[in-house]
Length: 221
Image (tube, rainbow, N blue to C red; front, side):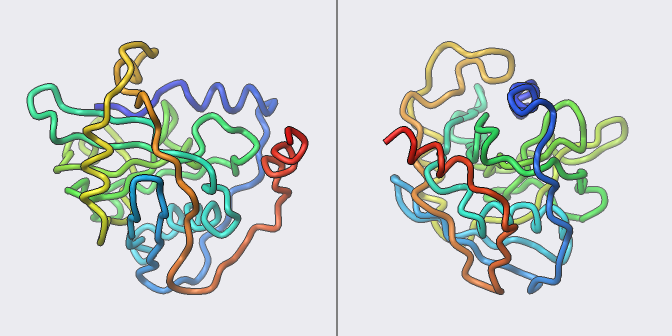
């Protein structure tokens, strides 16, 4: 299974190739809990800032800025041989107005984290340093996403500690038959809205960047 290759090209093209710089890793508790309030129910995740500090810092910047508010879980990737396993993907999608700069990959070979049931993983594209504001949650183990000789893999950076029933229900949602490339047949017919994401540990560190998506929402009204 592969994450949405080509999605970052859409985002970068719409921003002229420029985006706000990603946050540098800062001091955080070893484990930082974040609660997602979704239209399908709550999900609480524990981010591993000790082993994946850069990926966690990037993810927390989206949380602390409110960049996930009003986004969605939009993709359900099921194994053909075991449709109750796979992963769900969510985040900013192609909304360039919410995007911070891309972050370098922290591979599983460096962090020691693996793609197990409930693992959070940063979605990326063809370049290994192209993670941004999209992420996936594993349903069942996905060792094919771990680093191995000749394949850099993906960055695992936390795990679900409550709400896996919500994640499994999202994986089972109907998907549309269309789509391009890796997304074909995997886009949810009715994405699940992320009402808000809020950290439960540590101190919020907003980036201070302009919240263009909120300004545009006000204009539309």
